[in-house]
Image 1 (cartoon, helix red, strand yellow):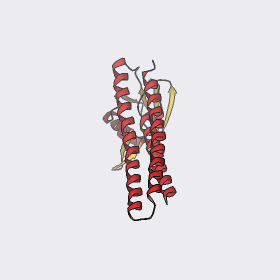
Image 2: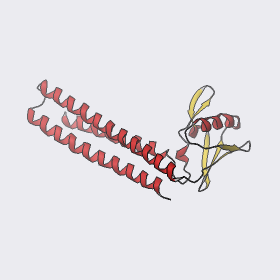
Image 3: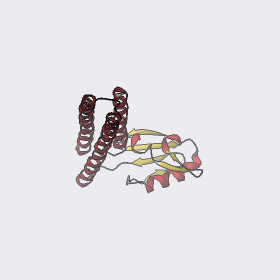
Image 4: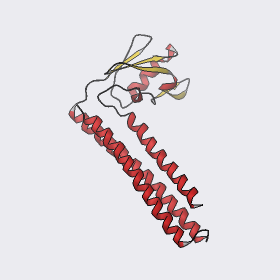
Length: 185
């Protein structure tokens, strides 16, 4: 019973790390990356659709993204979605493809992005701590219902704390790596 609870907690905590990594992939560094725009929601026949499902995204040059829609009629919708996003990029199109030029990052913009990374990393830590809290509450409920002993409760709490510490360390490493990447000139 405790092992199942620990496995579930580990899956949820690992999911928080993966979510953070995906989230941070969309934060722009000095290089062009398809991850910057692939999750951007585009209005397509009245439904918000990720850009990745509407177009191929390529990187022909280090500071350029090229978006080639599968359906050329979606170019205007894709441009609107890019302009409405917080990317700060202006799309240019030739009727078939959209080109996004990524300007070099200024020092102030780098610091702002580092703060965003720090905040998102903290959100990841909070998510992991929430999983820990839920798991400990479940353990205490099991002990209260006499399904596990008090010793099992203490062991379970120690195990969940070790798991939490390990996952938070991973989150910190992911955040530090992204901050270094952003601050790199």
